[in-house]
Length: 440
Ligand code: FES
Image (cartoon, rainbow, N blue to C red; front, side):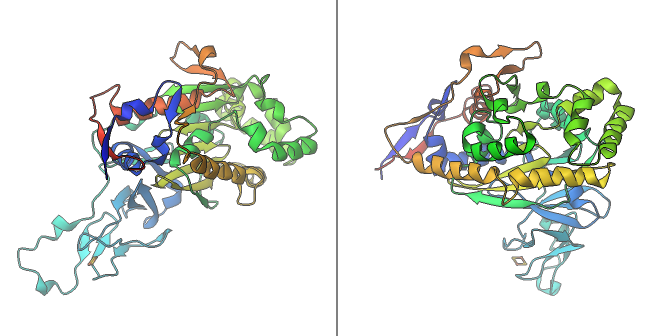
């Protein structure tokens, strides 16, 4: 087979990306190495491992790991690989365990990953040092307002710096609770698709597709509410898309709701009026009227945190690359701490209506991802166009790039970061990689 030199730099331009970033296994392998094994990756919410011994399986791209809370209350991120002969030591998706025992030969590890059980130890020499066989741990683990991130490399900036301007929107999301905290214990639903992981990251902050992919849902919703939902996503919409830097981006829905009163009205019909009003008042009491209005105005955010977290509506969406053409997505709705149960029930029902396994919206997106991957097998049309709104972008004093909601600002933001990491455009130069020539 012939091999060709391919410069990754040639695959991403300011306004378009090459189809090979979705179709080349070697590009995928480099993404795992340079993005998912070298930088911050979102793993889950700390409430998912609330008690000592709670665990859930997580991934750094292709590498399996376990997020668990040890007996001292610290969150540990351990690689799911026995230090004897390599078997995964945890098979359950989540649960509670004092120890992780490998089923192959019984080596057993505690919640800090230390080897505490060694069957038939007499077979090992007297110099055998158990401490050398602790599970591999993530180099860094950090928690921002309950969101747990980890990095396999210690050479990363501090998490708050990494999150940058996305922190403002994460704060708004958490501050919807009068206690300033959410929980992610209402369950997780999962789906997979035969397409590249980046399709999901692009789509979660894509304001252009909604009126087409989700037309049927919006028409039904419009009849129910007695107003046109689709106008929020057409050319006259006052909403904006934003590049927050670091590859993070946003569909900013804030102009839609400008006062606590409005949100109270939105809740009305879903919860008794007195419950909605009491909720708004609890936010005002904690935050003051202006801040409460700001929090409530952002209560339907679409935020992408590079590389694999989407915060959409009430959910945390974890995007998990499996191969260049296979992706799994874990979608976990949150509940607000400190509110009347009816508020959380209303949030969950509204979430399910669009995003649930039988929801009217999200399953349609998945079909689009499958179609994109299938379509990109066509050779001769090599580029995907991301230029929408390029000429009407504005740059704020804070450096945030903004344009119309339907513009492809978030997608350009994602690939700006992708290019920096993969190609070393803004950092050290990276070498070309050798790829097998297509069709050779
Ligand atoms: Fe785990 Fe042998 S591979 S105990």
